[in-house]
Amino acid sequence: MKRVLSVASEAVPLIKTGGLADVVGALPAALAGQGWEMRLMIPAYPGVLDKIGRGDVVWADPNLFGGLGELYLGKIGDVEVLALDAPHLYDRPGNPYASPLGDYWDNAERFAALCWVAAVIATNGIEGWKPEIVHAHDWQGALAPAYLKYWGNHVPTVLTIHNIAFQGRVGADKMGAMRLPADWFHPGEFEFYGDISALKAGINAAWAVTTVSPRYAEELMRPEFGEGLDGVISQRAASVYGILNGVDGALWDPENDPAIEPFSPTKLAGKAKNRKALLDEFNLDSEVEGPLAVLVSRLTPQKGIDMLPAAAEELLAAGGALCVLGSGEAWAETLLRDLTFRYPGRVGVRLGYDEALSHRMFAGGDIVLVPSRFEPCGLTQLYGLKYGCLPLVSAVGGLADTVVPATPATEAANAATGVTFHPVDALAFRQGMRHMVKLYADRKRWTAMVRRAMKSDFGWERSAATYAALYDSLIAK
Image 1 (cartoon, rainbow, N blue to C red):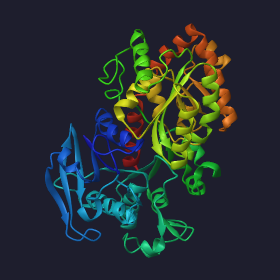
Image 2 (image 1 turned 120 degrees about the horizontal axis):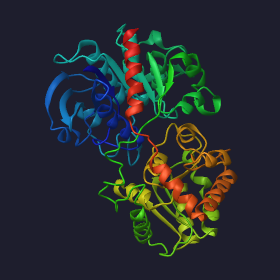
Image 3 (image 1 turned 60 degrees about the horizontal axis):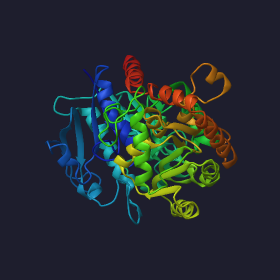
């Protein structure tokens, strides 16, 4: 087996705040089928060491960015995990990035330390194990390829950008604390308008840069999507690849999901039972004649939450209902509460996140809403397809790559799996909802779309093969 070290800030089932963790957690098993042994390297947040069986200390540094750092080798399932235990950096309440009071003041150093150790392991190996490839994820892992480049180490590296909006940008005064060489502080490396950008450092250093969908790779070279790094991405265009995320079929399987009443494309009776149970769970009217729409999302401007009232009005006027699960910015939570007051019995909201509830929502919903202003890949629409909850999505990024829009041509070819809308504004979203409602009214047509959506193949096999081929091509260089 060829060896790859995956460096990330989170991974299912150890720690999760979003889709990054799902992808990082799914890749090792997917790549094993392609002849690659992937070890995960993440910080040892509270509880992580217990989940990997604690394992053995395989590396230590008494002064790792201000305190003792120890690397534990353990396992979660069949996957080997290197957990970096540094209590002064990672033993904190809250999620991996913030306390209830806001982002941790030293996040730059916390994840620089993770990347530093990854680069050391890639350079020296560890107990007879040395990676042939280092695969870093987002800004939190981006300095691993950068350190290797600065040290003159020629281990091939890959950086995957899951969301370019998060760049690890801090003041230049952090350079010493992050162990970055001052002579590399210029626009061609990690300097970004007078600051340090960890993500820019990784983009310029990695042998290959990947994004989580082909459309997103193209979008990042445009100013409206590139978040100031479009020029940097464009300069690396020959080494930028869009590789679509997949769905973990073991976790997301409507025929064997313990959280729901099972159903399949050929046996849809269970879906009707899940729909009724979902209405009851959200205390909504039991007799909803129109479609039941669900939204499972972070509540931020990126996710288009501000556009929801216009589309909801169209849905509810047609006798439908809406269930929402999410948390985020205060204005968005207030907007959702207002919808429940305006439409009692028709709109239900749960603030927070509940993994099992999300499964029940996809299983019981007729439509899943993803009105994102930008979406690198999106997993929500893929879960919707898998569970026969047809996506209504904006035509951006991975949403456009995975949902076949209902048009005269696609319906004539029996190919449509949802509805897309563009431009990304409230009017287009409302028109998309109107289209969905009309489709739902034709029950034979709708059922055919549901069955077609459930048969869509967005597993990891194809994407894992693409990653493996990329790894092989970099080694060949």
